[in-house]
Length: 348
Image (cartoon, rainbow, N blue to C red; front, side, top):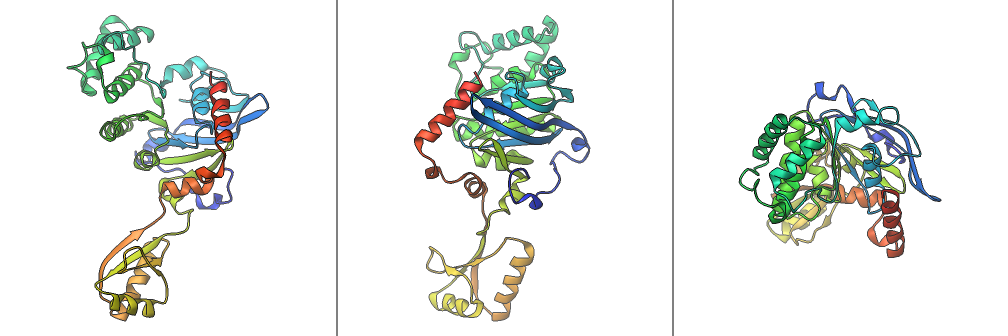
């Protein structure tokens, strides 16, 4: 872990795609720095992304997430750093990097004045595909993203979810090995967001590496093999979702009893915990490990307590995020506005 005292808690990167997919690195970043005037946006960022995985970068508005994406996709020049994407040196061979990547930004690149199919053809031309190859790939991708029926309609008639699917289909025309998705589900309804999650899973299943920025912590928890939190120009936490959750204390086992008398007896026998919002529950502190939960259940069994229900509550990524970046009310609206303006300026 970078920039935090919890470094001993983070193990080497793991991925859901299997050991073979993790043998090579799709993104390598060492000492990335970027400043806008006197304000440092990125201050010595180090990160690695194994091939065939989903890496999610989290952070408050203005933290520098979009700046990282624009630098790694060659749209903005870093002030310093050793950067490799898709096995290519960002400074020495930016053209090779551009050929290896695809980028879907916060705002759709779809042209609403032409049809979905024509948007695809236009992107195929930009990739210098032959007419036959462009048409073949377009047909395949429109079918894959369930856009065949809408393909000949103006893109302006598409829903938000359809536009996002078309946007990613356009990105895939170049068959990139690394895709940067910068807040791809912002503004989508819950159903469209979950459809987009399936798209990301399918991409990784095909061996593509996905570098995802998002403000939805549930999204990172659902998709990412590894997560990093960016704050104050530095990575303040990094690890798998489960590793990050273990950094925050406060988990407990919630025991529910049939009546107040049994609850009172449990308090006397266990001598730990506190009553929950439900008047018949007792919340017993626990780190959530199998060992600690088993030890508690053994105590319950020995005491002959009649437990009606049991639930395990542990910290989630919201808790982690606020623990390492501070609560929203910890910064003034003016500070937030300045941070947002600085990042927008540096990425123009």
